[in-house]
Image 1 (cartoon, rainbow, N blue to C red):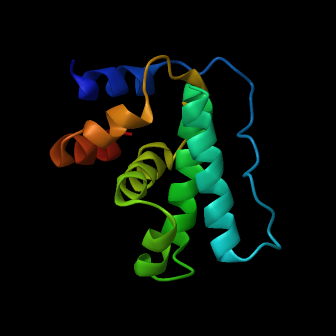
Image 2: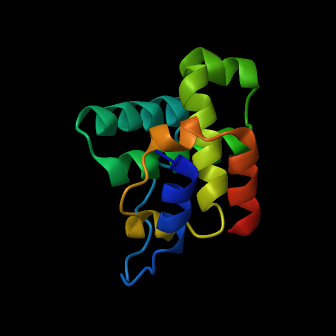
Length: 128
C-alpha cells in the first residue's frame, strides 16, 4: 500500500462541511505537563476505540503542544513515547495550515503518517 498517495488524496478531498475544529482536550489554566498528559491519554483512548478522526485530531493537538516547546524535549519524551512524538509532530505539520481538513479525510490514519518516508513527509508539508 502506498501511504503517501492515500494521504495525498485525503488532503485533496473537498471539505464540504461547515465544521469548526473541536476544542483541545485541555484548558488554558492547566500546566504544560498536564496538557501533554491529557492530550496523550485522549489520543491513546481514540486509538483503542478505533476512532480514526479523533486520533488524527488528538495527534494534531499533541503536535501543536510539542511545537510550543514550553519544556524540554527530554521532559516531553518522559511523558510520551518516541513513536507518538513523531506521529504528533508529523500530523501537526501536515494539517498546520488547515486543521479542519482532518474531518474531510477518508482513509488516512496516524500509522500511515508514521510510516511515511522522511522525503514523502517533507513533500506533503511543502505541497499543502
